[in-house]
Image 1 (cartoon, rainbow, N blue to C red):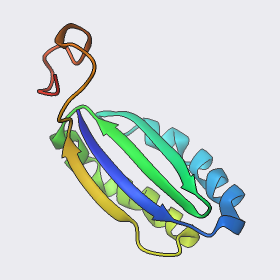
Image 2 (image 1 turned 90 degrees about the vertical axis):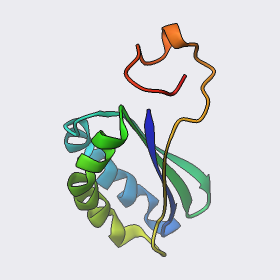
Image 3 (image 1 turned 90 degrees about the horizontal axis):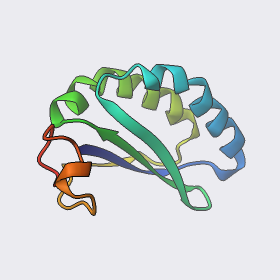
Image 4 (image 1 turned 180 degrees about the vertical axis):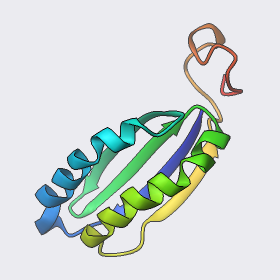
Length: 107
């Protein structure tokens, strides 16, 4: 598994609009090849962390044009540029038999 993690500062007074935009992009997000899940976690007022899980680094890299389009639409709600971190799983509580069926090196 490979992760794209964005720390986001957004206009808290526009949270409902921000979530409505995310909802409107749900179908497009589901078409991203290799994406396993996408979640936005509210970590404080006007602060969130977006976590996208991919089956591989290659899938995450290939998804970049779609992600840039989606994030570009979200930019209207941001109060600062997102902080991006990328990387593979270092450790998982899942054992090898229940993890990725040898599709990755995460367990």
